[in-house]
Image (cartoon, rainbow, N blue to C red):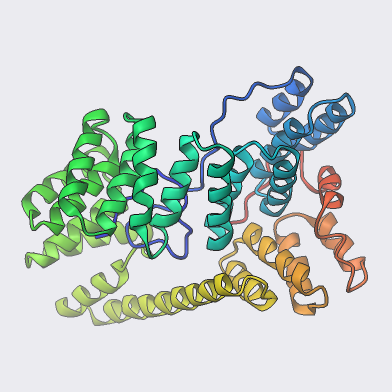
Length: 411
C-alpha cells in the first residue's frame, strides 16, 4: 500500500503507484487583480467563449495592458482548452516578461511533472523558490519534486516550511505524511495523518494515508476501521476497495477479497494490481477462463507501463533526444491522449525538424484533437519549416482552430 497522495497535484499517469491519484493540477492560486481592460476577456473565458477571449486579450494589449497580465490570461485560455503545447509556450513567454513572478514557473512545474519531464520540473520548482523564497507554494512544489524522485527525504525541509506557513492545510499535511511513508517512517506518518484529520475529518487522502501507516505497523484492525470510514463517505473509492481487498486476502478471507476487488475493478481495472490479484483468486475458485483473461490483461499493462517508464528515464538522461520524445508520443497516441502527444511531437520536431514520421503523427494528433487548421497548415508547409509548430504564429491562429465553446476532449 503506497502513500495516498489524493489531493495534491503532480502525479503523472504512467508512473503513479498503485494508490496515488492522477488528478490534473489545480490552478495556481495568486493574489491577482484583473486589469479593468481585461475584464471582458475574463468574462468570455468564464462563458467558455475562448476565441472571443483571445481577441479581447489582443485588443487589451494594444491598449497598453501589461504583457504579463495578458500572457497570464492567454495561458488560462490554453489551459481551459487543453492546448498544453500553447500553454507551455505562453507560460515561458510570461517567465521572460515577468522574471520576478513565481506563478508561471509553478504552472510550468505541474505541466512538466505531468509529462514526466523530471529535469524540467525540478528546474522550474527551484527557480520559483529562487525568485520568491517566501512563497509556500514554491516550497510545496520542491517537496513534490523530491517526493517523486529517488530521494524523497530531500523534500522534508521544504514541506516543513510549507506546513509552518499553512499549518491548517490538510493537503500539505497529506504530502508530509506521504513523504514520511515513502521513507518508511510509519509512526511519524501516522501522527501527521491523525493531526490532519483533526482539521478535516472527511479528508479521504489523509484517512487513506493513516490506514497505510497502520498497515505497515501491523495494526490491521485499526487500518480496516479507517478504510471502512472512507467507504462510508465514498462507497466507490477505488483505493479503499483495493486496500480492503488486500487486507482481506492477507487474513485468508478470499470471499471478501474477491468482493472488494470486483467492486474496485468495475470502477478501474487498471488500478494497481487488481487484475493480477483478482485473476489469481478466480483461478483458485475454478474460474479458469476469467482468471487467465485478467492475468493476461495485467501482463500487457505491466509491459506497457515498464516500457513507457524506461523511455521516460532515458529521456530524462538525454533531454535532447528527438527519438525519445517521439516514442513517448506514440504511447500517448495509443492511449488517445492527443494533447500530450502534440507536446512530445512538437518537441521532437523542434530537436529534429526533418523527422517525417513525427511530422505525420503530429498532423494526425492535431486532427484528432480538433485542430484542423493547424494540421492543414503543417501539411502544406515545407518539410523543414517548423514555424507552424511554435511561437506566436500558433497563438495568433488560435481563434481559427477552436469552436466558440470548450474544445471537445478526446482523452
